[in-house]
Image (cartoon, rainbow, N blue to C red; front, side):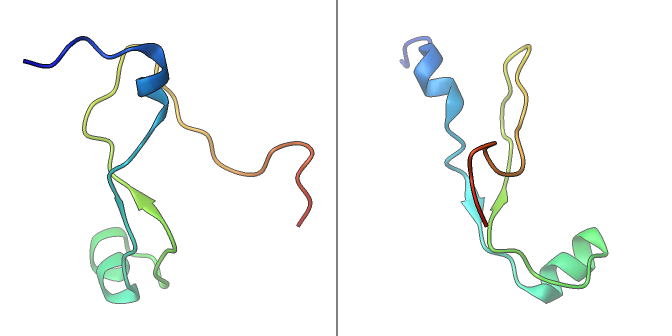
Length: 59
């Protein structure tokens, strides 16, 4: 039995890996591997993902 998730638990995405170039080329037709890749196993209604930097972040 697992209790209903609380809102704070809905923000993490712990299932991730670091695919190499061969895997990425075969499955996504992209030339280079990735530092981080996430698998979304379940999403709640209204869920969304964010990509990029925060407004006050510098590179």
